[in-house]
Image 1: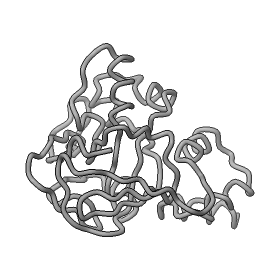
Image 2 (image 1 turned 180 degrees about the horizontal axis):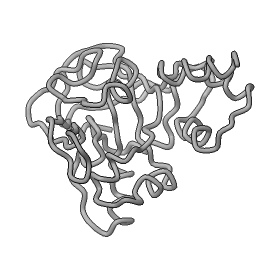
Image 3 (image 1 turned 90 degrees about the vertical axis):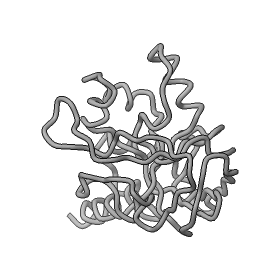
Image 4 (image 1 turned 45 degrees about the horizontal axis):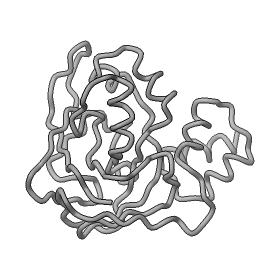
Length: 208
């Protein structure tokens, strides 16, 4: 695998919504620094629901792009889903929480699926796209930064599977869409390195 695109978002007004968004990302030809909060100069507007150390980087795969191009009947530019890094030969459904990706100087760790919101639907110009995205089960993955550093287009990517319990990001997404969740499944999710927002949610539900 290799990085096919590193994508940076700038604050931009978004049609059909009041306010602005950083979802409009453009490929960078230069090396990009990644630190614990994500890519340098990448804008995150809604910090309550996006970003932070456990959702610092969003990755998406070229095979998923190819599927969407066929589904939508048009070519799609890298970054259109709001991902920071586009990776060849990476199918997001195969990723599990705790899997690590080594690229350039950087090590990322998978923490969660991307749950789509109205901003993505607006970006894609389709009010029904949230439902289509969920039905497709091609979520892409949020990652935390284990080792900061620089990456750029063309860097090799090595996937190191998590050596603990395997919980796929699609399993987490299915649980989100099919709540309520049984306590045993919540305990399973808490046994792997999920993102802090999900961890707080499941810990609260278990204590109710």
